[in-house]
Length: 197
Image (cartoon, rainbow, N blue to C red):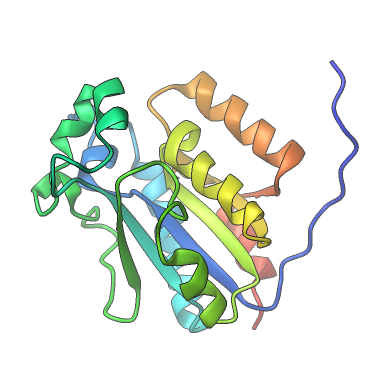
């Protein structure tokens, strides 16, 4: 197997934490969309605590639908997405994480948090140069958001122990690919140690 040579990226001066779809539907193992998420949620909470202590931006995304015209092809491909009704309990952020008023809460209808959304401009306005990405599911919305973060010219850090997926093989394969081509793979503890004071 041949991989391309790559360089390690350094953490920038103004990172933002992007918590992708850490909602009840994706974090409750009883949900058809869910997975075992306890360890990942604990890692996400440690990141949130560290970012808040440094007054760095935090973005939460919620994949949810308010109208039949939103992402009809995506929903046709994956019929279980019909469970993600905007305002429903499954579309709420997992109770363990508790967004605060200063956090950005962004509803989306497709995998990437950047596609057709104000996120790129909002991060630019806040002087952000680095995206620290975590959440659910690694092989879907986390990956799409991570790739688009790089395409927005942000330094990318994906937090391995703060991501979850229903498919463990897809989780591992997508993390590996993200680390080889797009950004850096760190644990929550490693990322926190690199945050600016």
